[in-house]
Image (cartoon, rainbow, N blue to C red; front, side, top):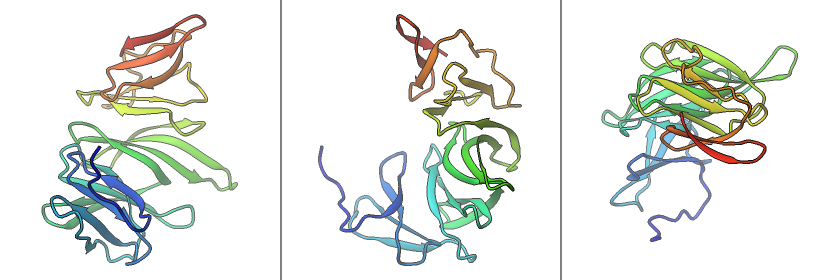
Length: 219
């Protein structure tokens, strides 16, 4: 493969746009509330844009499938956590959604109407709660949340944006396959005792392991 860009220092929380023409990252200076990025064709030029007035640390976490917007996360266990929506055409932060916890990962449905986050929050007794939270993007409304035991081994939306799929490695016999409309268990859900491990990138197939076989199944 041909090398396109090499950083002389290690940037934090980097994210590549879906079309591969822009890379966004966080670094120690300037302040973390700046969006720092490079884009084709002149990858050597580093651009900095002040994104908020709250001095929040911004971490690039997800991009819209069409590349028009990018979502940044801010906050941790000791501060207010939020998701910030950046519009590349206007170079402005459009909106903010306050979240109950700090997002580890975020995915956006192909139609851009839903998003799901793997979220961590500290409870009053100082223990951690890890959950998958499904949001409606337009309203910021939580459709449903599901507690999980560990970081997900598979996480995605179906190509038609109607189904959310995930596998908790601590409960691999019970894959999460849910309707995005109301968070109900999908009619495609299967509970057949197989050990589910991963979904294909388009979430149309899943691998499972039984006592004697490795299987690839249609979702």
